[in-house]
Length: 191
Image (spheres, rainbow, N blue to C red):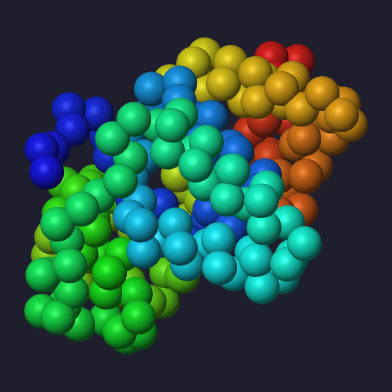
């Protein structure tokens, strides 16, 4: 698989599971702020977890996963499986994520599970570990106008119920993005 000229991040299943965070991360990727990557394994992991919690949403979840792959060209990392066995992480079940980051020439892994990806391991591959809050705030700080436009477009896309910019900021804070929310409060009229 060829590398990307843009900053590339592998999105762990735990950041794709929550709809708001998934929409936010993919909106930023769709605005060409970074190249979003995941694998069929990661897709299956987040959709399986969501189906377990919301079994009546089978078709909506399948459609969401399909729409993601249509909206983000070249999102799927393949050819990473042979790397898994050679990797050591605190949770062996997370090795596929690091393997995908290596094979996908990723600059970062975006995850809530920082403890499962020790810096000394990911640093050896030139990969950064970022929480979703750090990652989103970094995208906003690097290319503010584009990022804020993408966030505004995402909010406006939610036709029903209509979400105000202030309500979106509050939602982001409640969902674990306090730094991002604090910054967005200062520019709320732009989103």
